[in-house]
Length: 323
Image 1 (cartoon, one colour):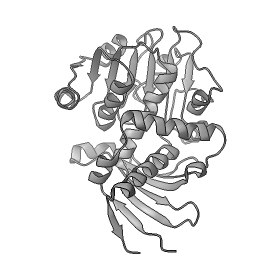
Image 2 (image 1 turned 180 degrees about the vertical axis):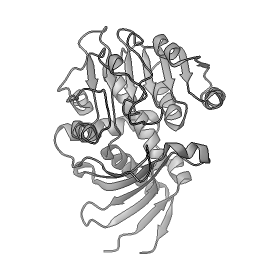
Image 3 (image 1 turned 135 degrees about the vertical axis):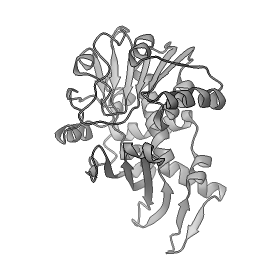
Image 4 (image 1 turned 60 degrees about the vertical axis):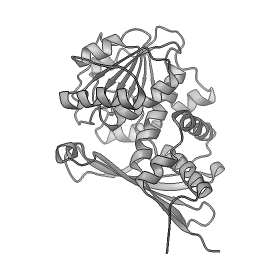
């Protein structure tokens, strides 16, 4: 049997990515399988060749969905000053029966989209359903993908954004008006953004130790926050005010804490899979503050990449490579 090797460029992936709603449905299905112990994923294996930077190998498989593979991803926050992407990723999918590689595809867009979809999925279970205000802290790639995902999941009436770079903030406000037709208000400070909103996304660079900008008393009762910066934006005092804390994978979370990340954050045992499967109710009253500290897991990358490849095959998109 001959197994072809498909290559999908960044443009191919951009054309084939599911909608935010479709992405959340794909992840929800995957988390049901995770809750049923039908997935395989070790914690990330990483190297750190430069300060505040890393390269991670992220393997995973979801046998019921015939999906298996690995993502090799780098995060170099200082690339912004060089005019280079801060996150770069390549995904390899393997045939689950033979183990042979079947596809190589750009993973940067998948990383951004699946991260935002996981945050929006967590918000569906942990945030107030009638929440209408959103704060985005960090106006880079993840700030952009998260706005798209939350616009799809909530009826937003007010959006505030903050970035330490006034130029990045100005570009974000302009670009989001063009791309989504929404008014994004530039916040004068992180405090203004956080205190004004029921939904909060911190999407700044991962720093070790955390800069801890957000302080105690800023997060209003009943608010939901998604931290995708490994808690870098949050002070220990602010974190102590959350009643419910959730993550996408407790083992990976614990592993990263043992490596010195997630400082100031308490241990987290509640997983997004527990919420999706109904094993946990999450919040028990509307006044509780809830935090989803998702680290980004390989299961998300692989299941979305498999959906992209399936669609590429159906549409005849991509380059067939010779072995």
